[in-house]
Amino acid sequence: MFKLTLVDEPKILQGLISLSDMDGYVYVNLAECAPINFGPDKKYEGVGGNLFAYACKISWDAGNEGFVSFKAKTQLIHHYENVLGAVHNGGHTMIIYPQEALFLIKRYFKV
Image (cartoon, rainbow, N blue to C red; front, side, top):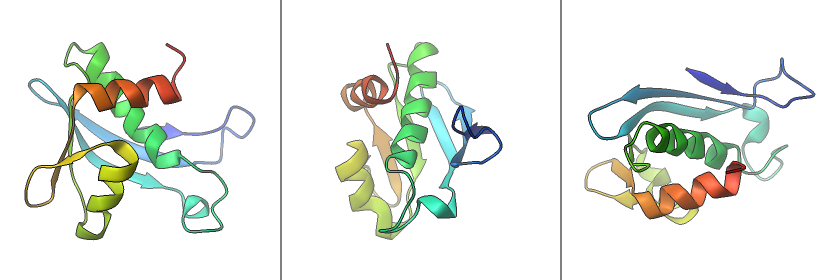
């Protein structure tokens, strides 16, 4: 489990993500933004993207080319396609492929 906080507010959680190292990819068990980062009045934009970028970076650093997989709630499938560049692979399964993973890594990390 990994947490996302701000340097100047280390005790306030902005988001959490749970990852599993699989054979050839990283699986996201759970990714959650703090309630203050939901909806039109959210405090910070991009918390979810940052969490998934971290999963992609973990995958990339492990030699898995950034491959990430996760299960999406039905109402979020299109959101993940549009925001993360994830591909819907049937059912609720989503995959982030290397090109999109690298885009997210570069967007959220100084590499």
